[in-house]
Image 1 (tube, helix red, strand yellow):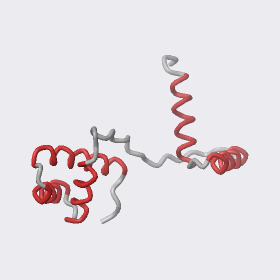
Image 2 (cartoon, one colour):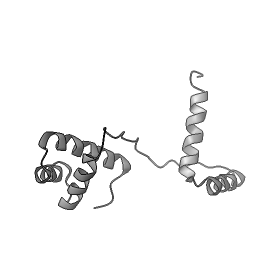
Image 3 (cartoon, one colour):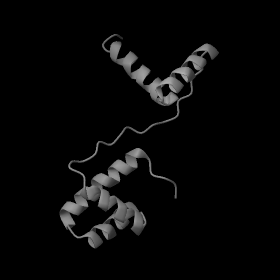
Length: 109
């Protein structure tokens, strides 16, 4: 089984938080998480332990999907330089730029 996505982790932690609030007993909460989420006992325990410390539910991030575009070499070089300088991933930089562009053009067409 592969690693959980960020969205899956947030959903499971939120579920563990609800289960903990309902059950209140660690062994019972672990068994319920194993059944509900199909995770190992060890992972269910980790989710419940983490969820017990949460003050509020976690926001569930939007799922990410691959999106291929073609841009000039110069743009790619500049993008890589910006990523290196800021410590951000290429995906994060492009996502932020697109969100900003879409926000500016809202209401136009």
